[in-house]
Image (tube, rainbow, N blue to C red):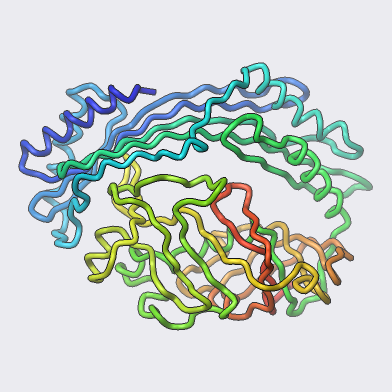
Length: 447
């Protein structure tokens, strides 16, 4: 990974070339170091160290926009990158709404918790990777840990433009995971656990081992339920995947393109009054903490749905200009791509229901969904996924369930909510925070 000074010099070179050509431009330069381990049969199966950097430019000249990138920081490569972008821009459609908009921003992400010094040695990390697999296969009827591993990454991003903006971000992250393949009486089941953090000592390998094993064991005798409509509580990682599959409904960019089903629904009721959803820039423990968006604007909090009412979409300067509204600072761009829109942390507000109230009576707890993105139509809202979980009564699991299909319409589902829990938790990736939510009825195809 190139050091900060090398990236800064490359950025200066690119901006000078763009300005000399009479263009406005912004530049994103990023670098990362990555380390990962996997184990198999008691030995390391993978020991991978990678490092790299990439720089990308977005040029705007006479309302024509184009991007280009280079993985080399050599001046000749940077010159070629700028030349390609300028040449390509001449053939793109003019767009008066996309401009270099952020002037003189000098933001630095200054949350120390996202870039902590880690004193763990390579031997410590190897020991953890081996222990993940060993911890699984030592358990009764656990025939293997087919997916397991440890990984860490440190990265930096510099954003600059021809209007004097120059912003800097650096972070570290680490993770580990283990899946259990459980076999007994000719049956098989598999499940896994994952732990993430900013330091090695924040990881919880025992959770990965035990959660994956316990769930795989509990699901072994699962069978399809009778076909019908059931109240459903999704495991939080499943709920995160579901909201991710339909995230387009919050995108100002998809609204600008005319494919967002909520493009004309601002201030209308689109969900149950029990549901409040926000895009949050900073939340303790969050994985997407960053001081600025991909244009250089300071990140901020945006209420998307307030007590069922659609209050805002996510915007960058382009979509905000198109609609003539305020920018929510959700510009998203990698060094290799064009300007888009993305959320930071999706946070669903807690409700008033205790766990006992939320889990009263009969309901279906779903802990695994298959084919989430292929089985979802983000425009219509229709979905159909394979699923596994448990039939529950009064908070107790009474029957494991496998081989079912859960189907419904996302936009209707979020209108039909029985209860929202009073305790906030997060998914494995720590970018989705929500309480448990009980949905009134979803169609289950079983037997």
